[in-house]
Each structure stands twice: as structure tokens, then as C-alpha cells.
Length: 111
Length: 152
Image (spheres, rainbow over the protein chains, first blue to last red):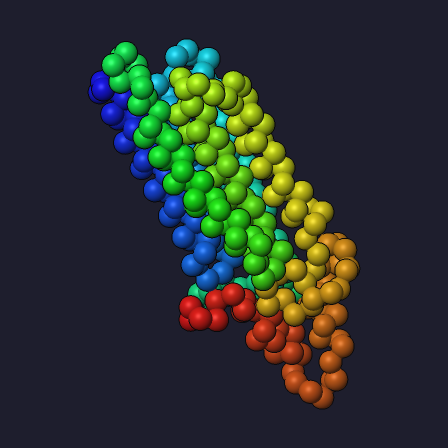
């Protein structure tokens, strides 16, 4: 087993641990915003580590390009979605667990 | 990569794939038992990302085995793109007012455009002598999610 293989395996296992951490966040965190934070950070870091791990073992440069395209797509998608969900939730009056920082006085449209 | 190790080439990547698959199944159970549509879409987001991760790891683990998955990278690209479309479509089209946990407006089907007027219309529904309007406009159950009842 060569050095890159070992690093690749370590990265893959580390990535899977981050996926488990993201799921733990989904199951245990108390409100929408904290769950969003767990999903969009832990999961994409896990996917990034998996992508790095597989890129080390890729057989061609096109494969590496595709792997990083997957990572970029997943990050763009989860960033956009997390922002949309959080903004919509805040506007429809769901408070963060720490309390609403500034409860909008006239209509909940100041997100 | 070197020939002697090729028999166990994908072993540890397969182990990692199983770990990610286990976390995917946990969030699938969460999506099944979700208390609100938002819970469900959050679980679906995680299932999307974890599904891409599982597919990548499994596809790589099986690459040199007797049953490879040809073209798994292309499938993963499509999955990654569609996972984003799901969330955006839910927020723009599927999110009804009252879907949020603790929103207190369950069952109402007003379109998203009336969302902003809701606190005002809520206040006018109350009797004028009941409470001052600035407090009647935001009752406690609206501003705190039921989700976090145990966490506070």
C-alpha cells in the first residue's frame, strides 16, 4: 500500500465521520437554523474530504475535474438552499433558539 | 494501485461508504418521522449530500471488483445538481404558510405572497380590548419554535 493510498483511505474515513456528525446534528439540534448550520457545513466538508480522497486515486485528469465539479455543485446547492430556507423561516416568524434578536415591530418582513 | 494490494483496493473505501450509508438511513428515518415539512426538507437535503457521498465511495470501492458501477461519476453530478433544485423548489413552491414548526397556522393554504401581512391581519382578528396591539401582534407561540422546547 503506497502513501497516496493510505492518505486516500484516511481522508475517506474522516469524511464519513463528518457525514455522521451532520446526521447527529440533524437528529439532535433544537431548531431550523442550527440544523441548517450542521447540514451545510458538516456535510459539505465530509463530501469534500471524500472528493479529495477519490481525487488522489483518480486515473485521469478528467475524473479529477468531475469530482471537483460534484463538490462545487453540492456546495453551491446547499449554500443557496440553506440561505433560502433560513430567510423564509425568519420571515414567517420562526425564532432562533437563542431568541429573536430584533422582533420586527410591523410585520415579520425585515429578515 | 500496486498489484499486490489490488485485491483489497476498495476495502476501506467500502467501509467508509457503509458508514455514510448508515448516516443516510438515520436521516431517512428522521424524514419519515418529521414533525413539520421543514424538518422533512432538511432531512432531504442531508440525504442528497450523503447520497452523493455514498455513491462516490461505493463506485470507487467497486471500480476494480467483479461488479463495477460504470459512469457513477456522471450520476453523482446529476444527483448533486438535483439536490439543490429540490430545496429551491420547496422554498419557492411547496412551503405553505403554517408549515413552520410552532407557526400555529396549520391547515391554511394562503399563498406565499400574503405571508408578510400575516402578523397585521392576525392582530386585527383580535378583540380590541384584549391586549395592546404591539404585544398581541406577536404571541409567544409564534416567535418560538416548538422544536427547541427541550433544549432551552
